[in-house]
Image 1 (tube, rainbow, N blue to C red):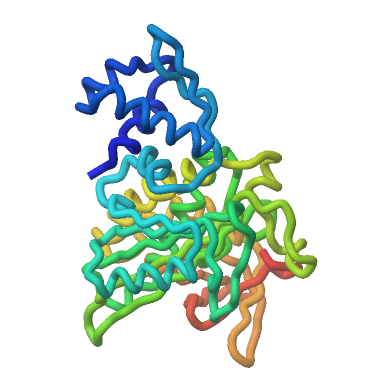
Image 2: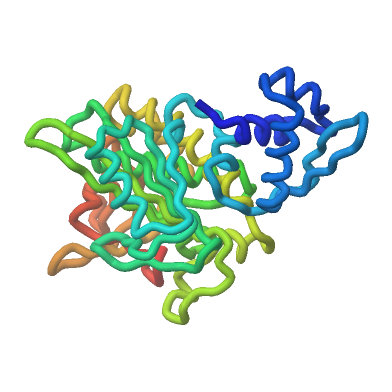
Length: 329
């Protein structure tokens, strides 16, 4: 159940112009005093709300604030993010979602943090950025799919976040197989999926998403490999709006994925966004490497690499690393 503050904020965001206090009272079933109290709270949080007698309230400017009301006011999903936990600071959203999963949190539960102190990426690498600059979020899935299909979810999420950045901000984000989201050859988003499973069934999957949103600078060793939305677009982005867009794309693509339990329904969209498509790549296997041309993915999410002799090799994400010939992509 949405809070009254969330419902008021949603009405303000949806209204072009003034919204009368009387209208709000009638639609939400609250008193004039309650409306005034919540408007005051929103102003204190940084929302620029103009109040004019006999006209009502008008939302003039929205700050880049994260919070349960702000995110929920923008969500238009049926199940992803409908159970939402927001934290100003936490060790790791993935770790927190795993805790919630053990307490029977429902499918689609979303944890969002403004800052995480022990974030991690692939192979356990530490990940850190200042307060108020990144998007840290993790989603709980309880899919009825076989454990050997679980790795495909990471590709589904990578595609969804890419599509959300494109539709929300108009930036031509792309996917570096299997699931890094890149822009102009630099990494923008990292995705990490973890699984709790028995021999033949999945208890739950947790997918963590880290988006470089409003970072202005990177450590020297990452300067040529990473970028942020703010650096690319030239101004701060509204993180809550992007989170909501991500949730909508994830819900849509997840439902396509679970119908077939493979990527057959998403292959065309994925390949259109694939930065490696028809590009020369270097495949780094344990103790061996070779070059070839990436020819897209198959329905299992494996990268198809055409070798120099014309044969096609299927590359599985868990075993190898793929790089461009001259750099990260």
